[in-house]
Image (cartoon, rainbow, N blue to C red):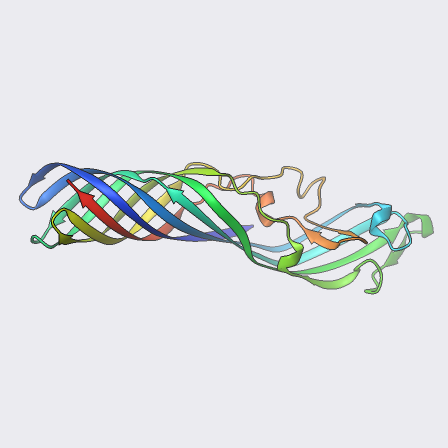
Length: 244
């Protein structure tokens, strides 16, 4: 499995400047951010089989169901309220504009999450031992044959309510008026905690995609197969700063 993520962040910070000399300054900052995190996960191909119960057959037979999955793609959107705490170094060219670098920590609290997209190709067939290992792959029976998965068939990912990351960033800072500043920069957030809850049984005793007559083919979220989900990402950051 491969994955990549990106984040946009908007916030307001408060900073205490404790040292300054020849246009240079150090401050301790804390703030409140609204973060929008987007993650994309991909699985190129996967094969497995499992014992299908009577609820997975139109005639109530049990059988062995085989799957060949390919081109699985899932997009997930998450939103957080975060409280960054960091040390900031600024070099000012003049009274109005300067450049900065910072390093600190960023705890975040999830406000919402959702599946934004899900696609995948599925080929499945059944082997019936009770009928001399009869193979059935007719598309009119039990959703066998070639199918395409959509967003409506995937389970909602289990996202943890809290995450923590180390942040480091740099950018441009401009004075608005008095103690009020604004900054535009790039932050790199290195995740310290897992974002998603994993299911150790998915891919072993629990199939990633399964079928029942009542619900058709349903897929687990691709996040359930991640044993680790400490996501690191680049973030475009726009901040309003009150410095005293």
